[in-house]
Amino acid sequence: MKTIIDQTGNEIRVADEIESLVSLVPSLTELLFFFKMDEKIKGVTDFCVHPVDKVALKTKVGGPLNFDIDKIESLRPDIVFASKGENSKGLVNKLMEKVPVFICDINSLEDAFKAIEKIGFICNQTDLAQNLTQNLSISFDKLKEPTGISVIYLVWEKPFIVAGNNTIVHDILTKTGIKNAFGGIKGYQKITNKQLTEAQADIVLLPSEPFQFGQHHIEQYKQLLPHCKVLLVDGQYFCWYGNRLLLAVNYLKNLKLLMQSICKKL
Image (cartoon, rainbow, N blue to C red):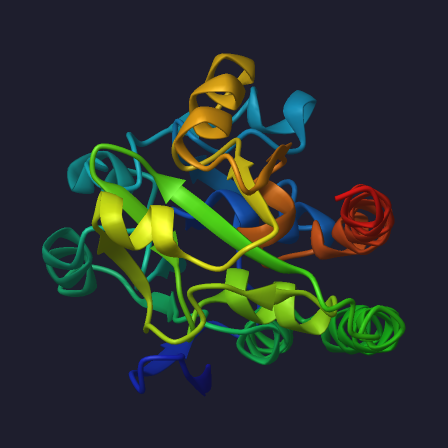
């Protein structure tokens, strides 16, 4: 057995060699496949979509907020991976009474890197995890040149919810050289229509998740915020904190160039 402290301070004892696990977090499911745990992954959520061909073969245990504890327990996992921000606290607490649960708490890229390395340790993939975080650190460092561009990153509407500081979205924006217009508030916060329309920003970013903004929202926000340009973005590249960050780097590089081009025309 080996001992590890998760990102909420809980001490967990797990088998030296994991034989069975369940993931309640889509980005961690993808990471666990990256760590070559294919045969050990026994259960995933309905929202775990990557890698497409592999998750399709796994037992579904429900959603991140309404997973089935009995079904998870029947899979006899050595460990379950969960997230403080994405899973139901009450259900996770009940699950912890039955099986070891490693809980991530991700508010920055640094938190993501620490989670990757801790999970790599659990999966006996320490070298692979460290190589991943080192590559990501170097890659993001190349994106840091400031642009002078300010954005609003909406995560929901009705009510309006924006990403403030102490979120991985804010940290990714900042490390890409982009200013968060709502960087003065903490976490994911509800804002009023007045706060939104009076925000000093060049561009509004409408992500594909958790709220699924689409083409039909573009004109709506152009009318609401006539002083801003409106862009649809892939939310996975702003809030997935596993190996998808490798793909995020190139996506963010191209998005940054696009925003710079747009702002030159303003």
